[in-house]
Image (cartoon, rainbow, N blue to C red):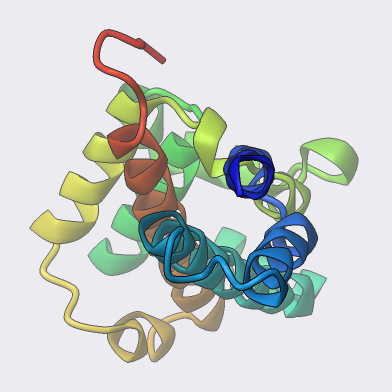
Length: 186
């Protein structure tokens, strides 16, 4: 049972869907689901988060260059769009001061290749995002009073996708941070 517990904990540390599924299946197959209920509950919760993150990554993959260009085309974007993009870039480790300028945001949206917005969003690891930026991003989104994604997507479909992505990264990063040992500074 201890080996299964260690495998389960290791799978959670890896934050891998496949490793979690394999470890959880092994626990169930060997009849230890009841004895390892707290660990299984954590693993199940993490698996759910990872699956949702995968779904959002699929939405990011669907973003076409014209859709991304639509975001960049705003000379003076609606406040909702600017705030969503501020939160998005802060999660990608840009300082809040940098994101206050739409000119700076437009420059980031316009990058191509490895540094493109789409690529950076696809390759983010929520456990590696600066927790201060996570909390600032959460505050920015909360302060603009967005009720749901449709409110943003009706103004800009790409901003709607980025809104969903930002909220999910925030949720995952906060969950990871809550599990860090006290004094473990990121």
